[in-house]
Amino acid sequence: MNLNPEDLQQAEEMEKLKKIVLRKILTKDALERLGRLRLVKAQLSEQLELYLLQLYQSGQIKTMIDDSQLKKILESISNKKKFKIIR
Image (tube, rainbow, N blue to C red; front, side, top):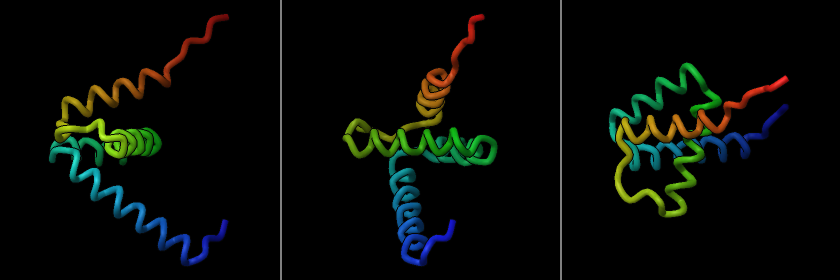
């Protein structure tokens, strides 16, 4: 897959905006947890970031999200993915 320079530049701009918004809505501890999660489970981290951005865009975030709130959100996202196979 070859991306042209404009696509790369647009992707970089989106990433910068995402980081700015996340810094705005997350406390320092929550940002650190998100960074650690990104190293271990990149896909889950991406889902969490998108979920947080959606909450921000819809105006549902009224105060900064601290570490314990982030853990609860992460838990709810993780629980949605679990399923049981019954044979």
